[in-house]
Image (cartoon, rainbow, N blue to C red; front, side, top):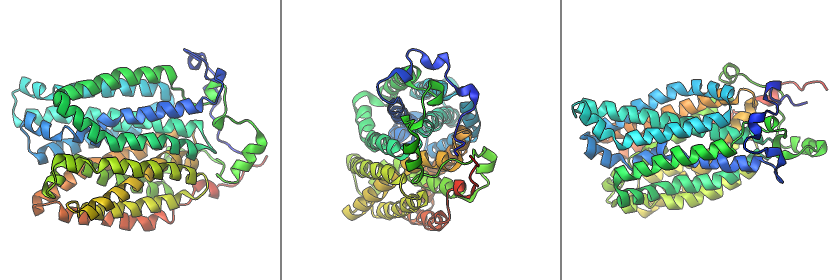
Length: 451
């Protein structure tokens, strides 16, 4: 007997029927949540590294900073945001996903607006290097907290709350568009910067996220199916539920955050996801510089993201389907192996074979990453404290992404190139793949409740 049931206070409320009642739709409203969650994750791109990375060279020029100084500011701004994300996760459980998505979108839009005026803010307080560092650090802190942190958290958790037996399928469908958005965004944003200038591009993104995404969240997003008078997956048939339970383990216990973080599976998946975030963040942040060192122009360097998107789309859809049928530890191990393949390819970035391995490895790994990050936590630990548990995971991933750019910058400065630091990065997936093989679902060790 499943305990995956929200408390009584989350039952149907008038707030969930404004401006319309989801239970009156002709199809299961969870698929609308998949759409809003997908848009929310894509809208977080200005606060993700591939969004910030497009502005890197222009910010260095506008603020008069070195690459290491900008990377360091990015690291501290990101670390600062990561420390607040566990608190944001707890607030999300209390306020609800709908409110969190609206506030996060408004916050990210305002943050990008501040970024567009960062050089002016620096000039107001003297225009020194210290002033520039403080101005851009505040911008990075806000963008990372609201973008990669809160908005992504509210979007991913929503799919986990609306689906159970079809969670992998829903995640896979969402991941198709997320992969296209994330892998295609550096190319599109680079074109936007060339067309409007870096400041014009930032203002355009601020309006799109702060205005557009917050309105979409307010009108269409909802917290969970029970609060709307619905059930997970949209199927009330008990026989179907029993058949599907044979594939996906039932939720026998709702883990609290403190209980979840004391389990080995939590840290195996957490560190695996963090490892992927670290290396891909470093790639996105320094892509122009990596291409220059390899003898590639800016257009050639950015061109790897489009084929990565194609591999990410296919792997995410397949991983979503597969996650409803196999143990998640095998998907984690596969992601880490693909990370190693992509990193080895990055070490040969100047050659076609290297770029091919990079595209295949990071493309497939990125598709697996999206599925694992969404499906794992509700399946392993239940839905009641999902925001708090996912908040810790997001905090660790954001912390790792903060280290990535400065990790590569320091390696490039110390050794005169990126090659040595790229090869050192191969140690992460190599070590974690063995830990992943022990990461079993904690629900399987919880005794069944008596009928």
